[in-house]
Amino acid sequence: MGKKRADPSLKGKKPTNTSKAVKSRPVTKNPGGIRNKLKRSEMYGRYLLEKKAKKRELRLQRSKEAEELGEDAQHVKQTPRTLDNTREVEQTLVRPDDEEVMADEMEDEFAPYFSDEIRPKILLTTRPMPSGELFHFIGDLMRFFPQLFYYPRKSYSIKDICRYAINRDFTHLMVLSEKSKVCNGMIISHLRPSPDHVGGNARGGPTAFFKVSNVIKSTDVPNHGNASSHVPELVLNGFGTRLGHRAGRFLGSLFPHNAQFKGRQVATFHNQRDFIFVRHHRYVFEEGKETNKETKKPKTKARLQELGPRFTLKMKWLQEGTFDTQFGEYEWFHKRKEMDTTRRKFHL
Image (cartoon, rainbow, N blue to C red; front, side):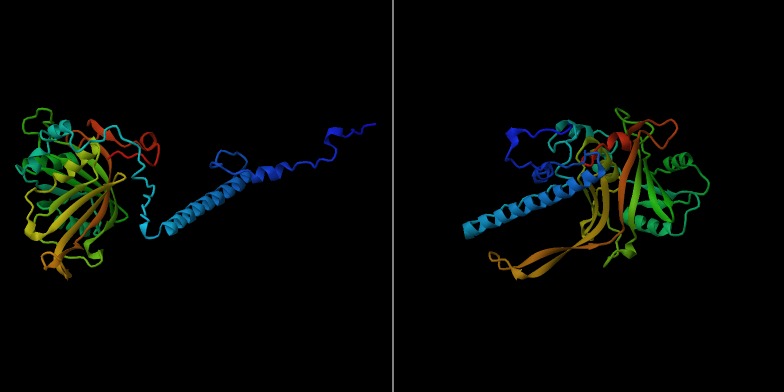
């Protein structure tokens, strides 16, 4: 009583081990959805090992094919997957030959600067009671931006400083903030109103706030040179969207567009993944030892010397008109939780 009889159909057959069958099964996708922590870590370890083995097989296969072809082998270098070449397609991405965007930029508030009709004049100030360390960065900015003048903040509000700057024909206002004696923020406000006020803002503007990071003073740059008073050439790179074009033209309006090529200086604003890298260089032409076979003259090489400073900008908001956080209307505001849904989404 109580004993179960063996099934005669299973006589002579070995019982299957289900655990071995599961282990032999390949892991085809990342097991991040498994709730059991121990099982998830075990499967993830197997997933990484199998992924590494597949890469090794492909590498061996490519090298074997190259050996068989010998000298006729044409190695096509595979482009690695990066956040830049796998970015999500932005709907406002601008083509280089977009006539509508070109027409808008010819009539915006920055057009007189790019056509060299107006030369920028910048008023620079800081937060109240700045530290002594911030003045080293101020000195670098005064050598970087032509026609930049420093005024102490004292107890004046930013609105009062805007009115003062407009009355004295300043075109831009720049306000620096700091934390732990290091610059961590920059407000830039365009003060000059649109010439005809058609499609522009009679109160001036726009105003932007940039988060500042990775500040390196000119004296701390390895093998740095000394900047001269020549107006540098301007390079704006990587601004691809409508917002990126506007931000790039805003930064470009801080420089006169009558570059003095004799100084051989270049100011660069390079946008990558919404981080704007700011650099200052001098280029030098040197004659190399190698000669050109056709002209039989020594080849000319270009060399860069960094002048400094180095710093990185990240735009947090863009506002219409001059600085007004209470009643100002925002053209764009960076909302991290809503906008940064994936690492491959960029706005500039």
